[in-house]
Image (cartoon, rainbow, N blue to C red; front, side, top):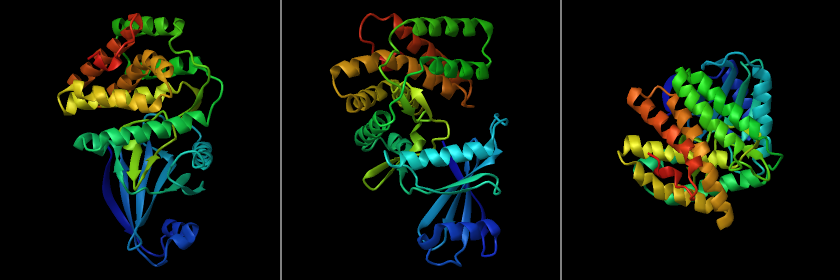
Amino acid sequence: MLSERYVSTLKPGDIFRDWLIRVLGDKIRNKECDVEVYKIEPASHIVCRYEFVGENYGVIAKFYAEPTGSIKSYRPAESMEIEFNRLKKLEKIIDVPKPVAMREDFSCVLVTEYVYGKTLYSYMEAESELYDKLAAVAQLLRRLHENTKSEYRKQDEFAHFHKILDQLRLDRENRIVYDRLLGDWWYSTLLDTPYGCMIHNDANPVNYVFSGNKVYALDFESSWEHANPVHDLGIIAAELKYFFAIHKNDAGRAEPYINHLLLHYSQDKSELYRIIKALPFFMALGTIRIAKLDTGKDHSTYAFRGATNYLKNIYSELIPKPWKCI
């Protein structure tokens, strides 16, 4: 779960603050206002929220040249430009934080507007209006996938799965199990799809924010194209199942919510059938992603067991209910 902590207050004369004031133009009425800085953690780079005091306006700044994760070898300026241009493209399709500016000599900073609202995670905690919010997320993903169609590159999905397994450094016995199961999925037709698309990829509950009557998708740094559209659905389904199992002590409570998400995404019964057959693979991927987090031994054990059971759904001759695996 993301958290914010106050860092400092910037006064007129601070170089970065004054640059923000200039690029924001008429959005800031009092050009002499103080700017409060809040650091957001955890994140793959240094990420801060800048709140303009008295203006009811804020921005998010992501500093690509200041990584905080394990990946240090990349081109920060190129990554900054890619996400900026991607957001400019996506804002014509779905609601995303408006890209404001980028600047290489400020540690390759990308600035976007801050979206005031509640995250999907908050609705999961309260379990209030969650059905409506999941329907809105499903419709957002539908627009994203439909409007970014491309060729499908199945091999990229498997390369991504194996990369995460490599990072976990599993013992030889467990890795053999996963490699065998993934091989079965590779040679099946369950993941075949007539087209690929851009996926959010980092489709976890904190990256969907509800403001007014809109839902915004945040953080497209790790998005990619030519992917399976079921990928995003599987990540959300895995997050729902894990959340209710760990925080509500009842994994079964996630089932109707997952079903609701899929029903509002699917256009007809035949598509729903195809999605449900492919979903266990991506729920396994989502659960393995969760296992990367430092959530404690018991939680990791649960995640690994769940991922294995999801992958074993390939052997079912019936339409599986992947959310019932654990």
